[in-house]
Length: 460
Ligand code: 4AD
Image (cartoon, rainbow, N blue to C red; front, side, top):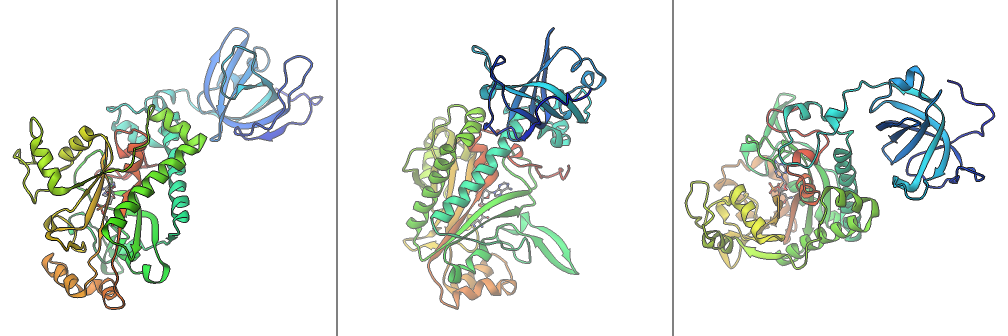
């Protein structure tokens, strides 16, 4: 195969570039372009082979007339994912034909850059939003699954969501920081700590950046971070990962209501931003058709009311021991999800009992049995945010370490905040994978991150 030297030089484009002249196949010539990409789909007919190529930016239908362009060794080996460079004239699609972008490439020359075997279809097309399609083969082949349309749409949406958080925080005047991942303190309990040897000392992978965020509000104002958190979760659920992306923020000089208002505002603005972006909205429409942004205000419900609500259902929603819920029970994942699905709107669930919450949470001054804490629950997923006001009294915090069996020495830098100009403050953490599972209607958080990590899975 040789390129015809009498043809005009080709302009290299990416597939999101629509700034080219479209020919009409008769007197009007379109731009001659050069496109790098991989084969997504092949459909061979008698006179023409239609090949859709993709380059990570878009897709393009390419028309190969039957003849020298198709009857050669390389073309016979075309398969899904073959990498190639295609040259040809860009033309408008004839009326009545439905083709993405309303343009197609009439190929006059190509070169193959990387061949692919013919068995990929079976892998990439199996990935879907279906609830039961998740097996070891898919996980082992995650690197190929990610080439599929659905899996890559989730990743593109994920980027848009992350950028929407960054934009929203910037508008709200929060400062972005980057706390360490290697730490020597726990935040959310010893049971889920990943321990490792740090030059002979015991250290952990961070469970949350919260404590570090609390140490910089004094000089930086309200702060946030989007960092990895690690949890040695010993159960396999559809919403637990060992490594996840944690969107965390800390707000200074606030009360509990300010915190709740802020969380609702943040989530709403992020959803608005994503929907306002045509491309990102397209991914949501593809992955979660019929998605409606949540109406405001979000339902606010105290833990104690939730316990009553669970027991009032017919039949009652029981606790993990199969008994009616009592004040002090953890609302387990199953019960929480049932409640969220029945109520079917975001819930800010507040005022959890002291005993079931972390050591640092501030008690409700009006009811010391409970904390000024909040979980945000979303239909389909359950908890996506956990937050609270923080204990700002020095003695109370020292007492809390004791009560929770935590040695206070390693936390000196955290405790010090209560010595040097303490202030009423609070914050929260949002699991990005769970937020996406809700937004993109994914059955599990395992499809909302590139390479999921959970018990028994640390590859690829
Ligand atoms: O409720 P959590 O444990 O709260 C904290 O870590 C606080 N220190 C955060 C803070 O106040 N800055 O976790 C917060 C959120 C959860 O609501 C959930 O969305 C997510 O982090 N999360 C997980 N996501 C995936 N896999 C896991 N194993 C997760 N554990 C928590």
